[in-house]
Image 1 (cartoon, rainbow, N blue to C red):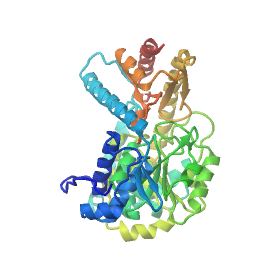
Image 2: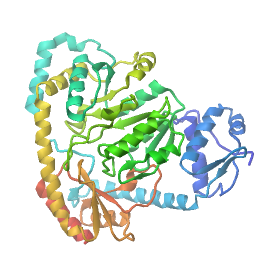
Image 3: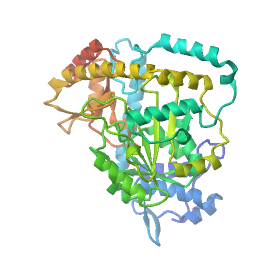
Image 4: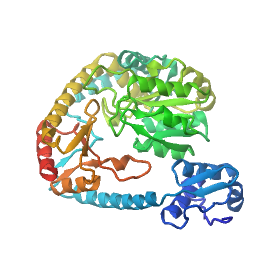
Length: 470
């Protein structure tokens, strides 16, 4: 095929490569582009659309990474055998539409009794009076100082405090100069794009933190979806890709709950060490909450070659509205940061930074965190107690850490969609793993979050699920 009719919309907020990618993927899913059909070369399509060839290369590369196209040396790009995939995708799209409609009904339905959300936390124990007092003290003590423009990386006192905290709690080795403070992980991921520029390839697990995936895509990064097992991302799978960045969550992979053992971490570090431009992006999600065994140090703590870009946040450990995250850059990237990003102002108010600094430095954060560990452990134990009747029919995973668990029926004929529907009929909301997939596939696992529920609500909700599923 020498012609492929694609209408690009210059007013569309999507990048041009995304528009090409979306069009071709849709044509393949709907069977309009069939197995074995040859697509125009990147050069020819770029000429037809009057755009740069690199833009077409990005779109084709993404489609190859996701399995929609196959690149044959000296021949070109051909449609892969994805009939099953697009049928599953259609079905999954239908499932999602049904779930969205059901969710809208539930939000206005008084009979909705229990929400096992994996994305919420318990704010009832937050020390509001302490936070207010520190806020007043900051305004009295520092006055106009906190109203002046600060360091683009964030206030040095807070960076120094975070460096000390990370070393003590996660084994992270860094200086305050390596830390960059930003308003949430979204901003920090966008900052990495400014740091590296475009035309990078990121490896991600299929079930992952989808906001990170969408941000990488918006930055015109190519995405390689790699296989994972019960231990997380595999270095052997990485070797089969062209990735130079890998996004991982070793402490508690979201959403599967996998905790990556030290041996697997060393394998990933060895992969990154093989080439100069390779880096691991470690999102240390939910690292504060671990219930079994000794704490596993951060991947960054094992890094001797400065190949790990470490990310953390206070959204789970303190409150989502705090909107303070931090990035620890390897020293070799600091020069790049100064060249490409130092002109950007800090996105976190200096008042909020000063309050957070005192909250941590004066010991309030550690006391609050210890209290929440006990609270969440009690809730986790209540969940496991209520799950005992389910063990004959379900496999339970993810209980070692974090704030949610996964249930998978031992009968493979039972689907995620069926479990969600039956739970809804009893007034419960549970969450399917397919909601967190890059390439949508039918799954048999559901997530049960418990952080925002009281012990009595957990018991009541699990009783409703027992009626629904057993």
